[in-house]
Image (cartoon, rainbow over the protein chains, first blue to last red):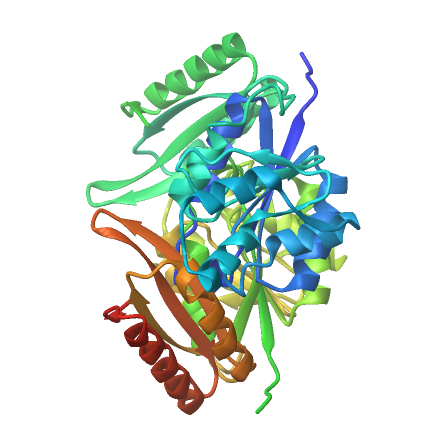
Length: 249
Length: 249
């Protein structure tokens, strides 16, 4: 059974992540949410707040992947340059989006503050809004590129508004996992045989080291639930044959 | 004052990170450690366990950046293909490295298990070892590419062995940070002016949302400690002028 894989790529824009000061959590969250829409996250890039890098990366990735998502750089300060870069990447201009202007103008502020906040109403011509349920300014979509906030709470809220009307995915990937206190070396040969009998399923092996010993988590990923169940049974039996106790992982 | 920036790129190899099942922590750790060696992390990529993708990414990045680091895919199972891919990328062969063979052979195992474990002794011709203080098999270096384990504990141990004999860095980036319960919109204009007066320092603005209110963390990064101190004072004064209380962040 083959099915078309619809691919996604996340571009994480932020010096803050690259310096190690902030730990990204958007990739893991978005990967799981996109999977439910049938989009497979197949690459992520973390890049700095540098115009040339952002433009080049967006243009490369929007050609290469079905959907591209960006997080970060859409606030009101000087280091928020994502909207400018997306406009450059698409060869278009930023326009004041009346809906966003209205939203931002509702909350009163001194002229200087309002001017900065209105920077967030600049949307590349032709872009459509990605609603922001936290009440703040929205993200936007340009063709297959979805531009979202970097703050996880805001980004997650935006993701809840994405649905099949905007994202045409394929079959979601389903997974099974099981663990055992067996080393990767012990199970390697048997695992390879199981993998080779199920080429449509991806069988991953991940060692762990805990206080009470070391072992391996085995994760199967594919779109065919019945095949996943058959494979899980084989892996479970393999663990038992090695004299170990399989556990949920 | 300008100084040459020595650049680094991390390639995170692993379906497990892309699926969202596992949260990467290697980027943040490596970024901080590399900075102490004078290497600036300027890009990271998360890619799947796919030969063609790994080879292409490694070849692109080793041209583009001064140093490239990879994590993941160096274990004994069928899904551990990083060494094979690095050999392909460099157009060379894998060879059984006598030192690693000796290390692995020390721990007795049935022939089938030993055979799998010995996969980890296959090092691309010309590669030099990256010691693994946890006692397991080492990583390796091929020219400017450093291949390390994906398990954070092991990766971190390997990183402790990297020093200035192998990595020729520039000046480490130093940072100052300060926070306030002021919105990004409020500080945006003043911040931009401060940034424009200190073009060698990178001034980042990061909003936060907490139970007790929202605010902004301001982070300055550069190599000149004296300039950083001057800038920090300006930002602190700006916060006070807005009638807010600066806090350590």
